[in-house]
Length: 373
Ligand SMILES: *Cc1c(COP(=O)(O)O)cnc(C)c1O
Image: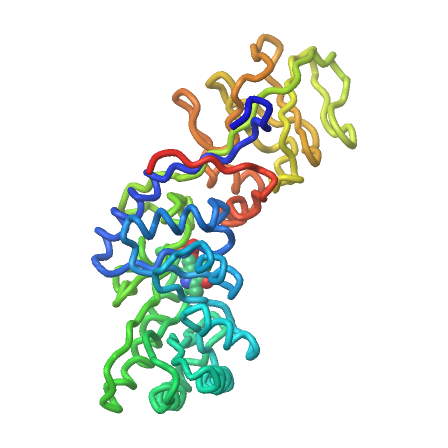
C-alpha cells in the first residue's frame, strides 16, 4: 500500500476464516458448502473463495450466475451451487461454466433440461423444496411429482435436494423442527420410489449452530464462517473469530465550543467545550447513516461516540474535554483496539439492523487488505 493511499481499510483475517471453517466442520462432521454470495459477505469474493478452496472446503454457494462466473474466471475449480432462482435463458450459461443449478419448479427443470440437451452437456442440479419460507422452491407437499420428473430427466444429473430455514437464528423457534420434518418427508419420496438419495442440505449458520438435526449430508454456513453470529443473543456452541475489521485514521482535530452544533442538520451540540475529531469514512462507503449520534468507535483504546449526522465521506467523534488524539491515530470501527472490541453485531444493533446488512453494505470504495493465510 502506498503511503498516500486512503487509510480507511477493511482488514480480512484469513486465519480467522480457516479457524471458523475448522471448528464449524468439527461441530457438524459433514461436508461444508461455504456461502460466498454478496462479495463473500463483504470480505471479497475471489480472495475468500481461493482461501476456502485451499483450506479444503467441499463446495461453494453463491446467489447469482454472475457470482459463479466470476469464481470460474478466477480459476476456482470447486463445485459451485447457484442458489437463487434462475431465469430460463441463464440455463445455458450456468451449464457452460460448470455451475450447479438450483431447480425450483417443474418449469425450470424443463428449461434446464432443454438447455443441457441443446448443448449436449448434462446439467448438475439441486432440487429446491419450500418448507416454510415461501420464497422459491416447490412446496414440500407437492415434492413427489417434482422429484419423479427430475429422476426421469435425461440431461439433468440430480446431485442434491435442499430447503432453507426461516427462523434458525432463534434457538427457541419451533419453526425449524417443522421445516426439518417437512423436508425429511419430501426426501422420503426417494425411498418410496426406490431411487438413491441425493445430498440433502438444509442448515444455514443458525441451523449449524443451534439445530444439529438439520445438519444432514452437508451444511451451508455463510455468516458464521466469517465469525459473526446470526443472532447476537444466542449462545454459540463453538468459538468463532470475526474475520473482518474496519479501520480508519483521524484526519482532523479541533475544539468545539459549548452550544456549537456539529454536522448536517445541526442535530447535536456539546454542553461544554469539547474535543472533536473527524474520521474520513461515511455512508458513501456503506457505513450506515443510521449510526448518526448512535455509533461508537475506538480511538487510543477508548470507546468514543459518533456525534451528529454521518456524512457521505466523513463523520465526527467526541473525545471529551480532556481526550487526546492526533491526526493519523488509528480509528477502529469494527474490530479490536487495546482491550476494547466493537463487534459487527454491536454496530448492527446500534444501527437498528442485522449484522448481515452491515457486512454486505461496506462497498468497493473501501480497499480490502488480507492478512494471515
Ligand atoms: C444466504 C444463504 C445461506 C447462508 O445463510 P447464513 O445465515 O449466512 O448462514 C444458506 N442457504 C441459502 C439458500 C442462502 O440463501
